Image 1 (cartoon, rainbow, N blue to C red):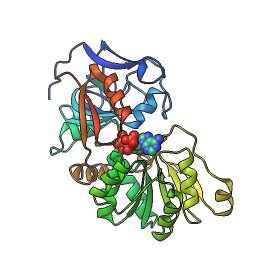
Image 2 (cartoon, rainbow, N blue to C red; image 1 turned 180 degrees about the horizontal axis):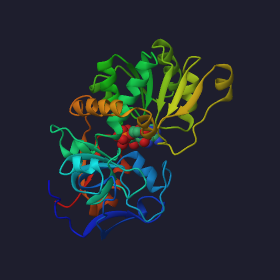
Image 3 (cartoon, helix red, strand yellow; image 1 turned 30 degrees about the horizontal axis):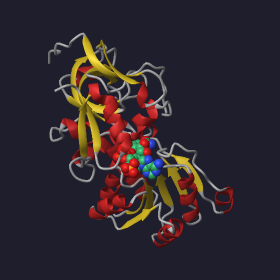
Amino acid sequence: MAQTRVPDQMTAVVLDSYTGVEALRVEERPVPKPGKDEVLVKVAASPINPSDLAVLQGRYGFRPTPPLVPGGEGSGTVVAVGPGLMGRYFLGKRVACLWDGQRDGVWAEYVVTSTKGGALPLDASVSLEQGAMSAINPMTASAFVEIAKKGGHKAIVLTAAASALGQMVNRLGQSEGVQIINVVRRDAQVELLKQQGAAVILNSNEPNFDQQLHDACHQYEAHLAFDAVAGPLTGQLLQALPPHSKVTVFGALSFEAAQALPDQLIFHDKAVDGFWLGPWITEKNLLQILMTWRRAQKLLSTELRSEIRAQYPFQEAKKAVEEYLSQMTGGKILLKPNP
Ligand SMILES: NC(=O)c1ccc[n+]([C@@H]2O[C@H](COP(=O)([O-])OP(=O)(O)OC[C@H]3O[C@@H](n4cnc5c(N)ncnc54)[C@H](OP(=O)(O)O)[C@@H]3O)[C@@H](O)[C@H]2O)c1
């Protein structure tokens, strides 16, 4: 397939310094050129995720020197390729793209990404909007249920459970026979999960939350918790779980240090560790990665679907991030090029 004509300039969202949303601006900048084993993707859509908020504050797992284009994932069409065999395979294909921190991110009209894990082909049945949200949360939800099942866990605890990811884990857990003990922070989130068929939902702001959590963990014999919040909640989870349990911290929504009482670690054989999707994926071989990806693609309109709350052009990225910061539950906000 011939390479599509690509303009010289593009609109991009740029982060000037690691000082949060105020450091975002929009500028015209040159369209990047794909190098060896890289492709150029004409971006269709990109969601705002909690990891993007962490990037804006310089608190993510990679920290390139600003100014930089943020945006952790998105979708689009491959319009040009650099040298390398894989590039030819991708030319003209609709893909999900992932930011690896080595190049600029996805909040721009064009993005260069690697053919080795940065671009993933989308099924024909997947829209570019769903495709934009098809990598990070769907693969993470799949990972959690896989980890639970491989570890022989019949029940797991999940915090920030009304999040897009939390809803996916709930639906997947229901279909795979893993009981989810949901922890949320507001009554509206209890209702939301109830409507989706979740059976065990606890509000961490209820006065007897610690006791309820303890009782639920023991009743369902949960020995594993996935914690997106950190701060004091990690310690509450650790205390509520039975002996020989683990809290896996996978998010830092509180932006606080995860707490753990030493007696829980020393005398009750409990542990705290972390989960990051990237390293979890790269531990798999290529066939396993493709199988996980294919399976997630098939479930994008059911168990692993994401709701969309609003869509903004890149020019209004700051407003979009502010709206997302004011309330994160209730669907993703997508950034898109101008119509
Ligand atoms: N480690 C990994 O590889 C990995 C991969 C994927 C996702 N994640 C993490 O998974 C989590 C969920 O992501 P998502 O995209 O599904 O999020 P999302 O849909 O944007 O929702 C975020 C949720 O977190 C809640 N929340 C925000 N701050 C909170 C706090 N301080 N305490 C308790 N709840 C809080 C929000 O509730 P309100 O509406 O009340 O604000 C909302 O329900 C994030 O922490 C994200 O970083 C990690």
